[in-house]
Length: 481
Image 1 (cartoon, rainbow, N blue to C red):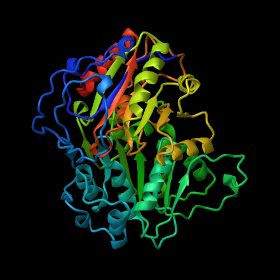
Image 2: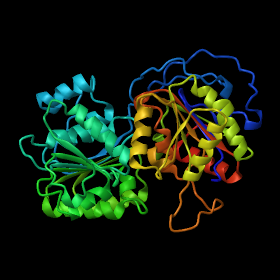
Image 3: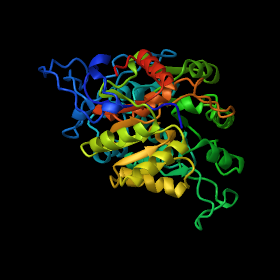
Image 4: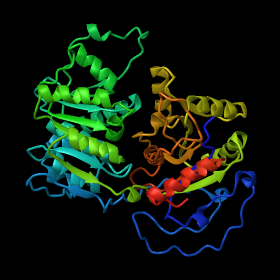
């Protein structure tokens, strides 16, 4: 089992001091601490964020699912290349979009106005000479709309050829982005297709070598499948106008999809030198930033300071547990009880074995949970995600396959059953030498607090090394736990 035996709950409200937000140790998890005197709420000091009274895990609850204002991202730093003037878009009409696309935004997406990151980013994407863009913003701030709207805006509906390509790290994220694009572009007539692995034993499956060339105007998929389509000459890049890397830091990181991503990007540059490249993520490590500067030229950029990336609408708690059995006990006695009072819950684990262990333990105790991890078939993964998005299941155990980009508005409780740690797949895992994976932690937390919602985050831990990880995370992102 992973050494991370800490569970964190991210909850709404303003950040408090570590002392005021600490949670009783799991051995006393069933006892309620005496509630301190409740103080009147202070004046709002940040978006959707008021000072909360102290409370224990026994008092955690969400009275109603309430949408809040978006995160302001007021400290986004923009660095502009060249002398092209950009004016922030206060409303979508400022972007000179087609009537069909504007209708999709208002009627299908039910948007009222651009978010902060959208108002700054979209003019950079849509204004000639269409410079490349590296964009970082908080989880749930509207980044997907930026690049989906960018792709739909650049495509010529009359040209039946691939013109926009979006590359994602996981099958689930690619399918989700395609659903958003089809919904937003419903009235445009623009065609789109997914490029993700399919079950080979499916009777409807057509081998890549026998499928016709792609004529869809937008392709969204994973790097492995896209690379195969290109190698079989089924996906032409000659008409490509815009290339998007979603979760770009992972797509371009060592140990991620760097080689495949670079190969695809270089092939496009040869076939379509003027193709615009967009990189989007909530996190960019310094190493990836340095690499991007050498791989992409003539780009604008938006960045947020590390200590400002933490979602202030998500309140975080920790529960210390002596061992693995106590972690399961905390999940059973406290987390699952809390799940009945909130919308939906994702419990993140580090390994497939952890997922199987926790799933079996909870099912044997009579609880209804579902689990998703990379060893499942594609059909099973699709089914589990659909059931969760349709609200048919409330508690989902997941490896990091859903840590990035997964958007489900009803998720307002995230549990880090295992804290994420960095691990070289080519080396044997040593829990005593593992370092915290700060970027993955931030992405996990971001599954709650979508677009300013107030939510909870809980983590469980039992080893001294894990406590060091928590202290490191607190300092890096200025998180109160």
